[in-house]
Image (cartoon, rainbow, N blue to C red; front, side):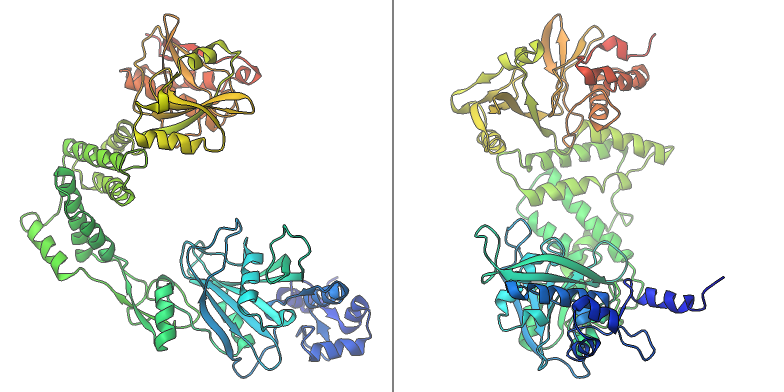
Length: 604
């Protein structure tokens, strides 16, 4: 039989995830009389739970925090409040602090790259709401992992606030879920006097034990500060925009660039002064992309006049701090587009052969501009690598476009890797004959004189925390550094994944002794080690064997890739046999990976 009070109880639970307490129950928890509970509610020290009826209910969270405060009073400890514990007001609370602030750190202790927008609203009742917000999409989550750092830094900057009557709230950029541009997070803390010199403290105080609450609706803050805080469009929430708004008091006009015109114009400026076929190709690709967006601009779900949702994000109210203005191609760029495509209004088109030539040019430029070269240029590397993605959509295929596209894409990615240099950390077990032979082939050079400066610098940096014995080249001529970790020799090798030894049917593939890092696969011919099968790409974590995971999978991919590079047709390669060999459980029990190449090929 159903209880007639069930609907009432369900309604309370929807509003209050923790059941509220009666005044009598709260009094028992706090060790006071019920009349004192009424006084604490009137003073704002306990939060009323509005469940209807004549009886007084209070939230369990406010009782818990009050109990903490009274328990810690003898030890000079206090607790801060949640946003919901700040009394609601009819008139706006005064804005007592509004600045871009330094001094905020990541959980690691490293300073944040961008200043934090720090605001606080107070009042005659002594309650304060502190609101922190990031000025960058790359510097978010101020009250999640680094909660103690954020609250401590804010309290140092606003020393006049009563921390026992303060709520710390973050205006978070909602970059992962849903259409809401922002949401709110608050965190409550226990604050005590610093006694441990090794513990992070702020003006002699420590912030510990954060408890979090999250609010999807930013408007939850409004009743507690009596006003709508100034917000900005998310793309416009930058240090410069905040400073200009603080200086003028007026909304700042900010460019909204969904079609990427500003980005491409900056990239075209980057190419100025560079000559040659690959740079001409990049200019053409950038101009053609501009042509496409001029003809078919990105749409918006909302009309441009509706500033509240112009960028397809939902804001709790029209942002008061910024106005977005959609960008367009500059007259000079529009003229360059018209001139370049006057005779080819359909834009750039390539044959498969032209696509391969262009892919090779762009890959070579990206590699030469990458971190393992003498003059790294990250902007040029990104531009060249991004340019590759614009080639296949502009390629005309004769028959089955989808199948030919996929086949060509796979081949180009394999034959022209974007990051051809992989770092391998290879433990050496001297008692293992194969590994001992490999180590014996290491040739140290006086100050690595035959290595390029950038190669030597990279190797030294990679092993900077270990004892370096020598820098030189490994048995197969690759740049390497010999170091020791817990008395175990280790070779760190810069491996070019394009340098694949040519396999023959009678060759053997032999694994070194399996280790916790990376187990190499050697090619042995007539009892001599002639090469090492490289990783199939620079993102591989290394080779391992004996189970059904990524390590054996990477080893199988590397072997199959080496067979293809050695001239064996796809139809000749027995992929199932390779997979069985690399995942054989016996290899986990000390057996060595050892197989003849011909045993990895389809019979006949």
